Image (tube, rainbow, N blue to C red):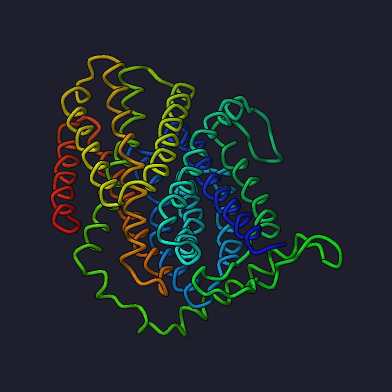
Length: 437
């Protein structure tokens, strides 16, 4: 197989990984609120449950980044991290208590930490001029998962049977469903992922992890137990990477440069506002429009259509307009959306004004998300992209922890919640103008 084909297959596998992360979010988010209520959890557990996943990803992202920067491989990292997704979703399926449910999201979040390694790999294996487009396509894959997820909920909500001692119903079925999907992904990674060399190195060889096997004449076919052999080896490599890492190569001062600080702040504010909105929407639609699980699933599906269309538009736009211009446009759209919500959504005047507010909020997301990731990869050192992307994703993880906690306690005080969101957007818009114009 030629290097170009291996690179293409690897990118497709990465897209599938991000799609599964979107599916997981989409099948769990519409039902977790009622699941917690059935387990007699207090209201603040909704924020804790949504934030727990991000907390684990926040803590493990830089560690996975250091590992990938040292080893220059990501395949073994992905295989290792996916085991946490499998275990966490199985715990969610069991769900005997609110505490087990909370722990399940913590465990699954460790698997999401490998995203820093993947973004580091994408930075090293793409040219600067094509990077924004590829980032947009990968992010669109996650949104495709968010779009497909509600469709799965349409049949998962019909589940009502026993699997041994465990009950499979519309609240527990998302856990076992995602456990199965992440298990199947392990075989896809084994078969279709290659650690291609950096695009600037010009090296013809392919760096593969010990479990990489080719299919065809004279090749060996992988067996299921190789996943666990690779995971064991991967855990050893992780601790060695951390214990023996030469941290002098990680120039911490580069994170204090004005443009880097602005981009990290943009990452924080964007995800803070997005997760605050997502946390607010479910109780709001239940209170004012009597939406149930089906109504919320349909709503999230329509939102997915909008966002994925936006990512493909930004993919097209990024080849014609500078990243900093795309970022500015996104921030203006987000600010406009926040003003609309302050005026029309705090005291809803009907479903139509609510829909417009959500539409505007989601419209600006692809512009900001793609441009800030692309710009960040260009203003930080390439040799430590795994660690840098880990720091970026940790900042985002902190935002996704604080966003639900902030919104969860203010669903009855929307003026305060949205007022802070608008203030943050105005601040980063002004800061961006000073750093990049």
